[in-house]
Amino acid sequence: MHRILLCIFIAISCSFFLSCKTAKTTSQSEGLYAGVWQLSSIKGQPLSAAVAPSAVPSLQFQTDGTLLGFTGCNRFNGRYNPQAKAGMFEPGAMTKMYCEGSVENEFLALLQQSDRISIKGKQLILFNANDMLMSFIQP
Image 1 (spheres, rainbow, N blue to C red):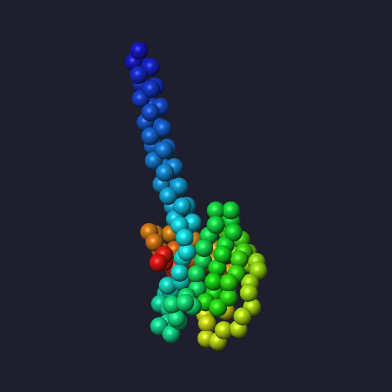
Image 2: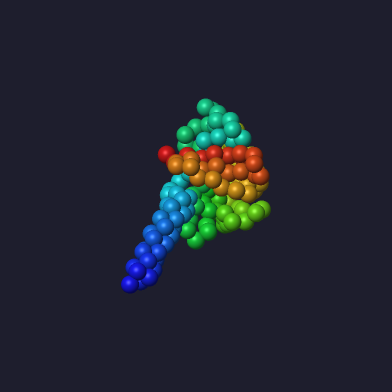
């Protein structure tokens, strides 16, 4: 009888601990898909006040691996794989408007260099090795 009660207690304890871990992982991954992420800094430097609010670059991650983005001038799409060690982002189609003074070139170059994503609350950070490349916030 004691063995049966011990087995039931162990089974319930294991399922409790596993369900807590699963819930935590799910909420972190859901954070990635929680909407639009707006660029807030490049290499630790806040965006210049000269960047108009309508020209702030942004990213939006889809659950199917699609990435939608705005460079501050042009819109683009592509694919992403957060588990990739290199080449986490694959470019896709992009509009080709000319916009003077945008951060587009630097934004796209840093996006291609990214090899790790970190989410802390409403902040998303892209890294290359241990270097912070860009940070994003949710408005």
